Image 1 (spheres, rainbow, N blue to C red):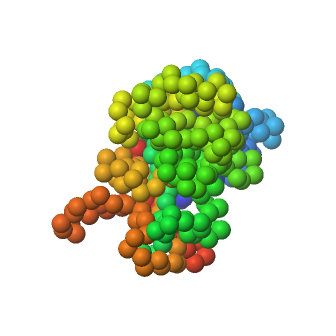
Image 2 (image 1 turned 30 degrees about the vertical axis):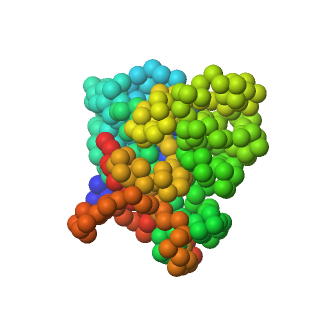
Image 3 (image 1 turned 120 degrees about the vertical axis):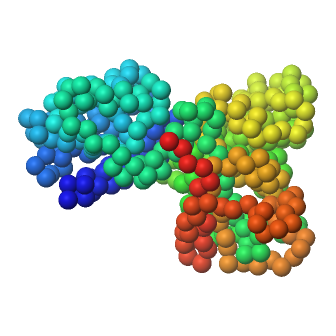
Length: 371
């Protein structure tokens, strides 16, 4: 019975944590709920990077509603931090406030925390219960878990296809495959992940802006894979770079060229230079991680999607499937280049969840689990 009650309040903390999506990167999403005598007296979530943690908001609200918290319980989706960063340790604040009990969802793989927060609480005589709704709590912080452990960005695929697997007609037309409801979900992803990646062909054919068009949304870093530096200044991704978040990944052959220096100085474009003209995603993601981007939404075309699957670097994704059929073998398939002779050799999407967007569906999948 107690466990069911704990799960109830932990679920409430999880829903609070989700409110921080897109605003807290590269920090984790965290929610907290303080309960006393069967009543919620304080709630909070991590709202933005560098701001107060969830526990701080929840405890401050609780202290306004109760003078004595000695019989109160705090529910927190992630192990309270134990180190001084941009904010003081939350574990010490819980001790200072005199709470009796702490219920935790996920452990924190950050080496600066990793069990130390729990130990601070236990040393102070606080009852600690761990791993309550752990899988649900782990799920909301896959980006944080991977990046804190590897410094490699979380790699999420999004693509929209017709029922016969096409991402464009033979003339290159791709607007719009899916309906407005499905496209709203894409905007959610653009806000959730720090970076969005496309190939130069997508830029040339679609001229996208790659911005988050949702209320209070945060624009992602816009990453163009462009080995031969075909990007021009009249593309939206360059013209609308007032936030200085456009990054071009190109060959070292283009470094210090007149065009590159012009883009850097006058259009405020950032560059990543790599050897040759055929790049591996492993190398690209490493370099992106080095500049502090913890997650990348891949919205690339056929070549990028195919290469990402070949290198087995996709962590998760969602494939949107429209109720449309082109029936043209010359239409652009979303993936190619595989030579599987047997059905047993097929790439299998794991942990599949189906989402419904009116007459469209989304196949959401999770290939790799962290923590």
